[in-house]
Amino acid sequence: MINLLELYVKLVSLVLVGFILGRKLPSTVPTRLGQFLFWVGVPISIVSFLRQTDLSGQIWIAPAIAYLAILLGAFFAWLAIKGQTYFSNTTPEKPTQGSLLLAAMIGNTGYLGFPITLAMVGKEYFAWALFYDLLGSFPGAYALGVALGAHFGTNLHNHNQFTQVTRAIIINPALWSFGFGLLFRQIAIPEIWEYGLDKFAWSMVALSLVLIGMRLSKLNSLANLPQVGISVGIKMLIVPLILGYTLPLFGLTGPAAKVIILQTAMPPAFACLVIAETFNLDHNLAVTTIAVGAMLLLLTLPMWLWLF
Image 1: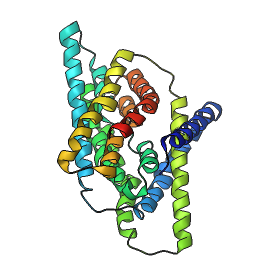
Image 2 (image 1 turned 60 degrees about the vertical axis):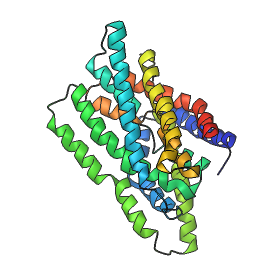
Image 3 (image 1 turned 120 degrees about the vertical axis):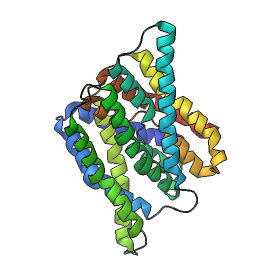
């Protein structure tokens, strides 16, 4: 584990490197890097970190908390939409409602949540973050998130979209490596291989942060700030605050609870933008929530570590 200042130096510097490279390099570079991490880097990292994690305790409750966080985000976003309609007599257009809901529900619990959890809590509890993301956030985004995108978007009858999404879930290499990693952790390997696997995994964590910087460099819209504030406030403040104080009721305390809180407090995920583009939702709102959420994280992270 490292202290918060050291985390910020590493986090900001790696994202900044990615931001600068994203401005300088061809647009194909972040795409290729993302493909490499998706198909190779992240799956191997999952296998490596699973070998060093503790799978005892109530770890299977992590996905349940993820679903609860998603539903809470959707509920409060729905209340915000109804409140705007009641008090101002104006109802946001359906694509805007869809993007607002998605940003309040889906957090960046993988590329951003993993390195922050590893840094602040340690590898021993990484499985909690892994279960939260792969068995909670990921299917939540590409099941409920896609359903909402289809409902609020304009591509309602494009069955090919649903075929592509279903295929993406089934062939997701992170899920397959997760299953393989659970089996492979029981197999002894030479120490030099173990060392190399660990170093490779940490290198992929660094590359994930660089990739986030590259993607942020492509975001150039700051529109709909009031609605952005609603989505980001729900996702990064209201939901983690409620769950943070209720986790003891589920028997979760200590480092495991801290991992869950950090995951629930992650900013809106890039999956929000992917779904918004797929179903013609409010693209500008999705872009702005991602950018604002990433910046707000620097302020909210110390608060969650202090409160819980």
